[in-house]
Length: 168
Image (cartoon, rainbow, N blue to C red):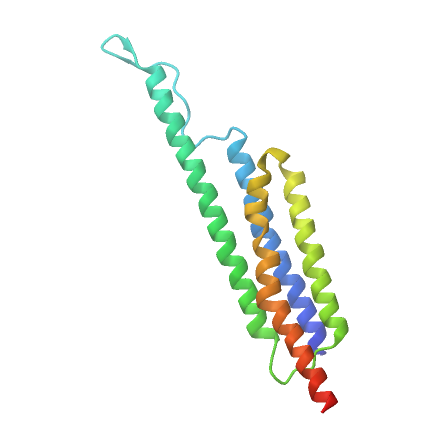
C-alpha cells in the first residue's frame, strides 16, 4: 500500500479523534452552562424556626459555579493533552527519514488541517451559541496549532529534503 495514502488516512483519523474531543467537550460545557446543575437547589430549610433556604441556595450556587469552572478547565486540559498526543503519535508513526513525500501530499495536508479546524470551530459554534465563543475558541485552538507544528512542518521539511536529494 502507498505510504502517502496511509499518511492521509491516518491524518483523517487523527482529525476525527480531535473533533470528538473538541466538539464533544464544547457540547458538554454548553450543557453545563445551560442549566444542568451538579447540586440541586433546595426548597425549604428551617433550623430552629429560621429560614436558611436563601443561604443554602447561595452555597449551592457557589458550589455549582466552582464545579462548572473546574469542569471547563479540565475539559480544555484533557482536550489539549489528547490532541497533542494524537499529533505526536501521527508524527512518529507516519514520517520516516527514508520516506518520499510529494508536493500534492503536503498541499493536501495543509488544506485538510485548515478546513478541518475551521469546520470544528463552526460546528462548535453551531452546536452551542455565540455566548460560549471563548469556550469554543478554548477548545478549538489545539488542533490547528499542534497539527501544523508537530505534523505538517516535519512533513513539509521531509518534502524539501526529498527535493534537495533529487537535485543532488
